Length: 426
Ligand SMILES: *Cc1c(COP(=O)(O)O)cnc(C)c1O
Image 1 (cartoon, rainbow, N blue to C red):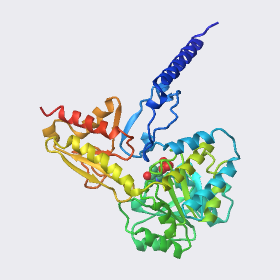
Image 2 (image 1 turned 90 degrees about the vertical axis):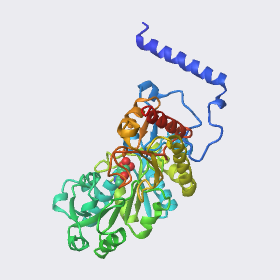
Image 3 (image 1 turned 135 degrees about the vertical axis):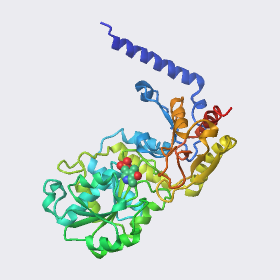
Image 4 (image 1 turned 120 degrees about the horizontal axis):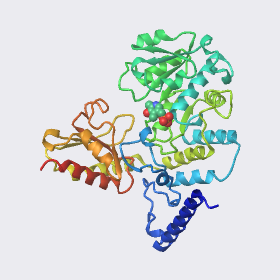
């Protein structure tokens, strides 16, 4: 019997052999990038198995930034190749975890490192490590009996954030402080660690003082620097200051796999974090597995990143912003600004402010229009709202993040923005 499934399969095979023949006829070289730009992420090996197309999932132009909901960064070709190669062979997972950690620690100038399933998982493993460290227990006792153990984490009120869950899932309690004096008094025999949210906008105690006070009490400090690269040197700056543990997201500015991250820091704590990590089953990190492909991808991304140059990258992001400015500067009332946030996402962002009354369309409406187009363009989520970029954006501002644009896309974004903004003011 010849089923509908068989027929679909046959159609697909025919399509594939057709498309392969068509590619050959076109001469594959004409559709592949002729030379690879440092920031280009187009893989040389374009697969015929385009599952986004098969699944009907729209590919987007990312004019927003390294946002998790937009799948963050695209891996550079060298990282994509390392991932594909790692998929060819099984290894012992623990061996790969240990070797990758040692390699990364050397390259990033810290005592020890581990590849986690993202910065959030790194924070969980850091908490588990500090809990085990303070209580002198095996990491796999977590979280059953935490309530009766040393279990307090000190955090500034202004540093409370959505990633607190990553710590709380170890069963710890967060002790909140506001003034430096409160901080000094918050240390108790139950304190296991402190957490410093590096890009928090508020907080009375700076990162150096925060660290010194904790160390006076022999309490380890974790820093969440997930989105705080570039500059590249931040990857060793905070561990160099003496922070015991520092986490980074692997899939944001570092451009590794989205489900990878780094925990960097002191050897004895990273060793404890490893104990709480998979493949150990009786551990809080069991569900935070990073596959061999992504571990290797993370290592390759670190190698790739250390060959990059902050100044050249920033100049390229600014060039893209300038290109968009040229397209929209003649829109009535338009004011343009290039804004670089100080810590997280420290790259040029384009701010386009105008009077929607005159132009006839609000930034939020522009955002929706670009979303509805093909290719779909995603603007920065700060578009049409205040608060995210301090005084730099409000309801009259379109925000464009240029660093995740692929070659040729800044031109498309500029043209489409101009078309949408000028269609109303006639
Ligand atoms: C993105 C982010 C995280 C989470 O990073 P993942 O790698 O997605 O787990 C944690 N903390 C901060 C401050 C972040 O910006």
